[in-house]
Image 1 (cartoon, rainbow, N blue to C red):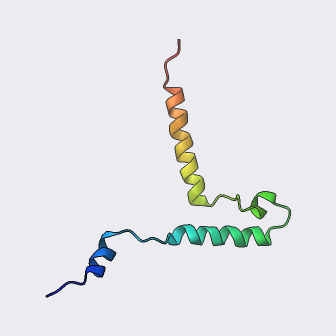
Image 2: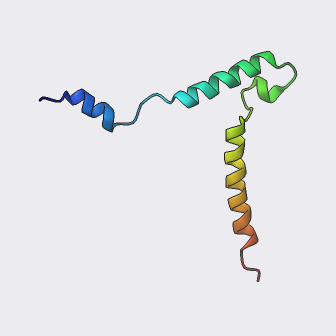
Image 3: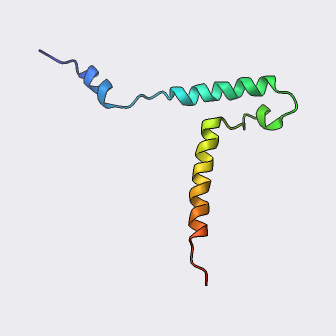
Length: 72
């Protein structure tokens, strides 16, 4: 039985197209198009709930490091 090398390459290499990133971009674009008066949304700087949770997690880690530092 001969295995097609392209099939092996597809199984080993990660996909080149980020579906989640593209979907998030489209959601932000649609929100920005329909929101009036919100400059952040119009400039596609809105933060989706998952992105906000990731930012809060990183900020919490940084805050914990600062709280645990030694005082002189």
